[in-house]
Length: 474
Ligand SMILES: Cc1ncc(COP(=O)(O)O)c(C=O)c1O
Ligand SMILES: N[C@@H](CCCC[NH3+])C(=O)O
Image 1 (cartoon, rainbow, N blue to C red):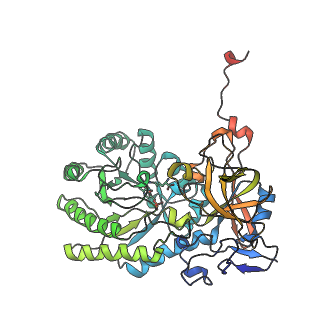
Image 2: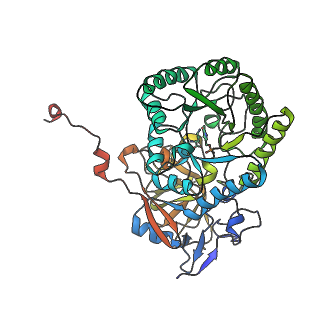
Image 3: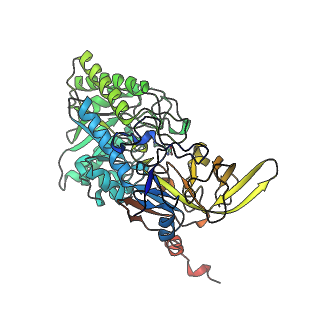
């Protein structure tokens, strides 16, 4: 077995692998994954290679190919446990943590989250199907979305999951569908209502959702009419209210404000006779993508949320609701890295050096979409001194296909393995086949073993859906 140095060692002058500055580097269970750059099990082995889950990253690439998503099971499980234990510590009522599977929906990830006692937030028929196929119980699946189709709503009703109703159009369609389905079988359908709370937060415009000018949810001026309407529906049980204000948030105040506003709406819903007992305050806790990112820990975030809900309920004299939250990024973001192989490079004198990798915007569209920042290390020479600032470019036919504009790296050469950190959330799930690149494989690593989570796509996969009418053949 290879000997391993802890990844938290101070590594000055070398590649940046020092994890969070929270003083807990030795004890993985206490480190909040969202405050780290690398997965909790990251280390350097005696070959000077990056190791994750006891697996040499360079060898994983040899075995499974490149690019490769590498998911550290311990980091994901630890984040799930930290969410649940924080609720146990700070919330005297019932609670349920959901994994927002939009961050990365696949069978293995849903199965891990579910095995840790988490439910699943889904936002499409495809995500719902994936969660069900992973063995997730419908009682802990919550179905979101601002334009669910009739087919999706029917699937949701038949599965028995809870539907988070987003707007009037959906509510009225739901009433009709439930009525039709009821002729054949059917219990009451559990719904929650998504409200637009009018709360702002500091994050990228595209990932803010709780401000008034948002496509999601019922506006405050519609809510009472919605409560009255639902009160008349014999087949729908409105069990609670939901709001989500945005993603990659480092402040705690917006969620505290949200708790206060939502508890007031709970009280109002009750005054219309709705049996609301559940309150879902969404996700949104940010993660550390670069050294300057400083999110609160999972524990701190949950504590703030719980205290705000308790205080609001006390002041309104309301019983504590069953409290739900639905984080995505802070559960899985840091648990995964992407390993690429370095190929060509190009120096534009006095401007920059481009170093190209064998993936790019198709496996990680976040930099081109949100100007997101990432950090990387050369995994096959971990103690090589950092000596240059280069621009890491993808291989797509697109000038904006730049993964990292200014990466501090040792001198690189073709064949080096570049590991980009923090790629667990919204990478695979937003991946595409642009330029007909096959999507990479993903492995889950633990205890020196790597198992396939997603097979690498083949060229055959790329044309699987293509049709070639005879009339087009010459
Ligand atoms: C409704 C809803 N819930 C949960 C999430 C998960 O957010 P995050 O990944 O920031 O925790 C999102 C994404 O922003 C969302 O839109
Ligand atoms: N896709 C976004 C997050 C959106 C969250 C969903 N509402 C990101 O990559 O940051």
